Image (tube, rainbow, N blue to C red):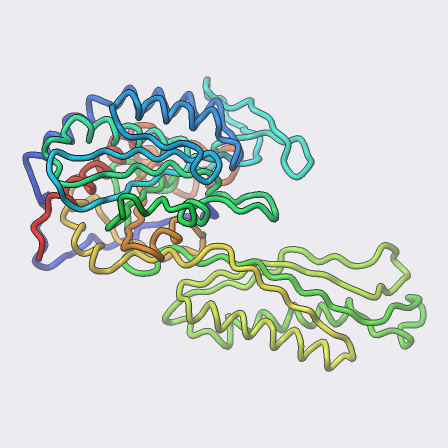
Length: 437
């Protein structure tokens, strides 16, 4: 996950007319009891996975552990989905709808800087370079929590009117350039079919939210993420005679400044946030030579698909017209990567009582949207879905002092994992047992 700090909105959820009660209180109580009993197992799984992280599309050891666990539970198991993904199918005691629960499995090319006894010492090769590998975004906790939820639900399957599909996904953090993977490939290979999924739920641990809390947002909760590249072509010359050039460096600088007006002057920010960031600029090889070309690249983030399309058009228009005004040309390429992660409003409202019953109404809070991105959005494009955040920061800690996701010092308070197990399992059970309108 391309993550940012998630803070509470500061106001407790007030859901008029919604009681903080599960759809099936007796079943929810049984799930809570079983999840508590699973705590030591879940922590042990998490520590093992943390010590042995694997990069995206290389999660063979992780997948093997998951598959063996699901088979032991008596589930139907599919392996090799989207290269290294694992899918488990649990059929309840009665016919009914199909609900999916998803966890991501991959680590990041980051060398861990923690003194944990199970800290990662793993290494790998990434983009041709030797790198350390670390679960610096909490995917190890996601796998462990979903393994725990699978074990809990397998013990109450006779009470479930329907089917639960457990999706363990590789490469959420992205595949190598030119290699398809992650949720997009899982959907392409039919993970939401056979049996056809009616709703999908996912959770993400958060290192800046105190344990015992759940956070959510209806509608756009995480941004789309697109990559753009702009190649500015002019005419090179000796640096001492710039009048003989069509200087692509100066032109590129003007384009960069022009791009900053998209968010500040063209996007209606009172409705949705957006980001246009130039992250790289490459030009020339010598200080006194004006090069013929400059190439820059960056990221686009939006919380609304129409705003996303507006930004695409603005980047192309600004880059092309500024280049033309200087006598140069600009070639703009935009590569869509991840759509907006948008929680289905009706499903979100339907499941809020479940969240309140699991964590307590005072521990379920609405958050503002974030400009990090998540490929869970590919599932939500096909079926109604809800993506939530589970607190992973120790009680009483100042969020400003907690190491952020995707950093070498990232760490999680494992006492928050049981809530994640309860949340996943109860969401599935409540969705299946709910009275249909």
